[in-house]
Image (tube, rainbow, N blue to C red):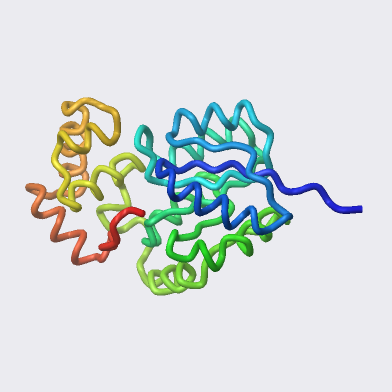
Length: 219
């Protein structure tokens, strides 16, 4: 008797990415895409309304931090397994994602070759991390935990920090996160205070020195 297909939810704000994922998954009879969402609010509603075994989640959602979404989703459906599929290959994002409740972490550049393997392992109760990400973890093991200034930032503060270092303006960040410019300015001030930095240029230099954020454009 054939086992039922594993039910998959897709959450990514880029329609082309969702289409590419569907094509990969449609080629494998073990998986069935049963729902899609393009933002955090839609993802949360989808999880509430549609039964599935795995959620494939992009961290860069336009209306809410992806780490926060993981926590909310796990509160709603603790048994739902979450595979993070993201442009962020930096280990600090993976650490936060796993702590929030993710079962796997895969960069978009690795998706075409590793997605099916990742989903299969997660569906069987395992945890998945790509070889490239595992190597990044190993390279950062020499750093004592929670000693660098950026490690004291909240998930949302880290997201704003990344956007500032990418050259986004306060207005652009506010539009992307669906908050007011005043809120973003408050986040910026809090980041500078927590990291003991005098201005945004110092944040950029810090990020470059510690190689925090990659140069890849979002897929």
